[in-house]
Amino acid sequence: MHAGIAPLNIIQAWGGRDRVIKPARSCGPVRYRTDEDSLGRVKIPADAYYGPFTARAAEQYRVTGTAAHPALIEAYSMIKRSAAAANTKAGALDARRGRAITRACDMVLSGRFRDQFVIDMINSGAGTAFNMNANEVIANVALEIAGRKLGDYEYIHPNDHVNMSQSTNDTFPTAMHVSILGGSGRALSGVGMLVRSLKSKARSFARHKKIGRTHLMDALPVTLGGELAAHATAASRAGAALAYSMKGLEPVALGGTAVGTGANTPRGYRRAAIRELARISGLRLRPEPDMQYALQSRLAVAGVSSALRNLALELGRLANDIRLMASGPVAGLSEIGIPAVHAGSSIMPGKVNPSLAECMNMVCYSIIGNDTAAAHAVQAGQFELNVMLPGMLKSVLESTDMLASFLPVFSANLIDGLTADKKGLRGRIESSPVIVTLLAPRIGYSRSAELYKESLGTGRTIRDIAVSGGLVTNKEMDKLLG
Image (cartoon, rainbow, N blue to C red; front, side):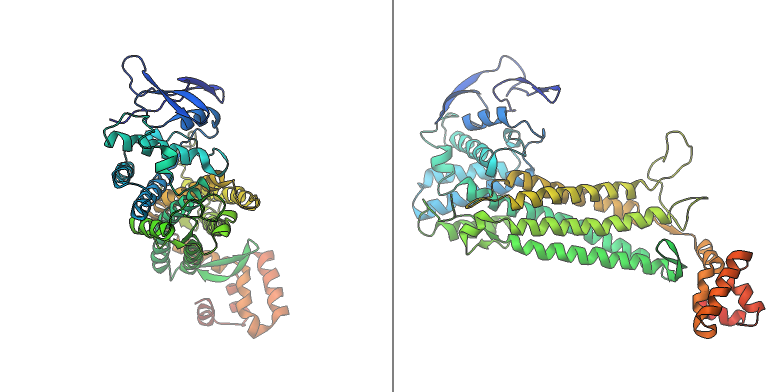
């Protein structure tokens, strides 16, 4: 029954192209109703569930072309539901209106009316436009539940009833915490998959010796399994740091209202609302003891954003190593084989590229950029409020979304399919002059350096020079190389 979206103008120029916004119903002429707010009257599509504030705001915030994130819609619906329940319990909201509002929130949480949340992800300072979009949609759905006409705000008002005991200033930070906790949890699930894949592959490559590299130059031998196990450790520890940072999001601002004083809230409301929000979200939420801090500072969001950035730094290193080890097949290192997920070239037949590793690099660069944007927004708070919340939230959720979506693909379609050129790996150990280092304790550093130069100059292996010179036997050399 719910409608499509339509702000004031049906066709709007946006970024050099026409932005076509479908009316509520596609057949027949669009019908309108007139809604009124504190600024005056506004024409709204007759069966739209948003109201005048949203219609005005949709005309202004044409920024990303992306409407509200589903996690934000869900978080706000849970907050509005919790607030209605707490207000009803406190006697501030009558039971009939309270039931209509909570049922309306349940309907939004079930996935309905999502197309009515039309405000761009980056909108007004503090997120007021989105809060009012949520208030209006929930109010109109509640009106319909109560058997009233859409826009009958004298009975259920977006501000007086749906927004009762609340402000954008305490609800948006709370919604940020709830939605980021959910997004980070999904990203952590992806990290867990990657760590398991890396550990499994490390076990299978545990005996595959290869030449190590420092400064991109030959170094002492290691195992391919050891290299991948180290990457598993890095990803695991970065994931643990992300999980730890999420704990900072558990204290929430709900109940602080406009400036963190709790103005216009009934006795007992704050604890009741947060207790209900924790119950329906399944999160360990609790009241932030310092409500003014809860509105002023976004330190906890910065903590999660920086943890995501640090995770991206480690994932980028992994992708880089895979690309280098897979380079070739003739002119590169060609130490590992990678699965062919699609043709590598539109012109060179048979070419296989490390496409998933390249994609991971781009994901990591985007996350690093998102953290920079979030960091600037976090420090931009002034006095009683940080107003840069929508941009901050967009950056963090974009990062968690990319990780949650791509890490399972990266793990299953790249890491799990890696193969090793065991013979080639061993051959490079034998041919590299750097293995003379293993002889240094026996023959000294200076003599070892002479052998190194001789190997490079003649093309003979260290084994050949050392054995023929009586410095070591083949059996002893085998033992040194493991």
